[in-house]
Length: 157
Image (cartoon, rainbow, N blue to C red):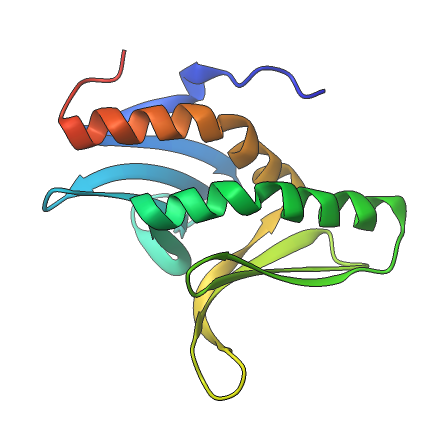
C-alpha cells in the first residue's frame, strides 16, 4: 500500500493554477483558461522556465476517462514488473493512448489521430516512469477536488 499523498507537493502557481512535480522536469498542472479547467501533464525545459511540446492535456471529461483507466494501466505495469510478457495499448482518454511493454520501464502516453483503419500516433506525448504514473494515481482524488475548486474560482485550502 502506497503512503498517503503529501498535499504540500500540490503547489499554487498563481490564481487558479496548481502544479505537482512528477520529477525529471515533468509537471501535472491544473489551470483555468477561458472558463474551462485543464490538466496539463507536460515536460518543462531543463531550467524549468517554459513548457516544452512534450506532453498532453486533459479536459474535465477526458480527466474522468483517464481516472477510469488507471486500474487497467496499473495492472499492466504490475505484470511488467512481475516479468510477464506485456504489450498493452490502452486508450486512457479520447484520442490519448498509453503503451506499456515488457522490457521498458515507462509508459508512453501519446495523442493519436483517427486514421482508417487504426489510430496513428502524433508527436504530442511523453514517457512517464511507472513511479510518475503511480504519483498521478495517488493524487487523483486531490486533483479532482482541485479541479472543482479551480472551476468555481475558489482558493485551495
